[in-house]
Amino acid sequence: MKKVSPPQCLQNAFETNKLDHVEVFEFPDGTRSAADAANAIGCDISDIGKSLVFMTEKSKPVLIIMNGADQVDLNRVASLIGLSIRKADANEVREHTGYAIGGVPPFGHAKPVETLIDAKLLAKDTIWLAAGTPKTVFSLTPDELRDVTGIETGVNISA
Image 1 (cartoon, rainbow, N blue to C red):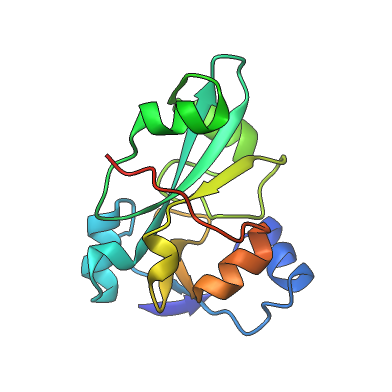
Image 2 (image 1 turned 180 degrees about the vertical axis):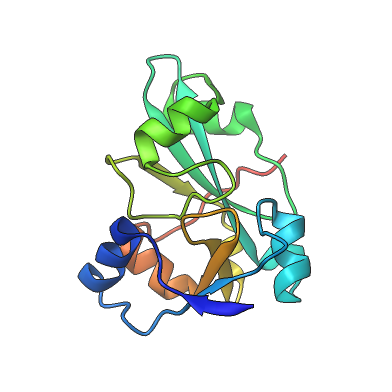
């Protein structure tokens, strides 16, 4: 593990949101999946906030920041937003966020993306999140994640 600089878009988001204290770490074996990240960091998989991009039936992206131990219940999400959803493909993820699958951070995206956060994740003390590449991560408190995203309350969206 070594400390590295995040991609510029994410660095700008850190600065805008007064998160200059946040450190980004790179793990040579990668942090592409929640399990990979938990193994690299040495934390429980449920401490990982995986950023998953979905597309609505109207081609609108929705970012779901999910507890690493659980799966998204697509029907629950569809009920919440009033539209059916499907997983975004790699090109859609990069187009809307500016990042590749496995490295999507929870904010600092190329375009605005509607976001939902899993309620279980916001109950954690520390949340580990992707930092723009499939090898980099950073941590935030739930309050910091709430402040940056503007989302006060998580939703029950696990399968």
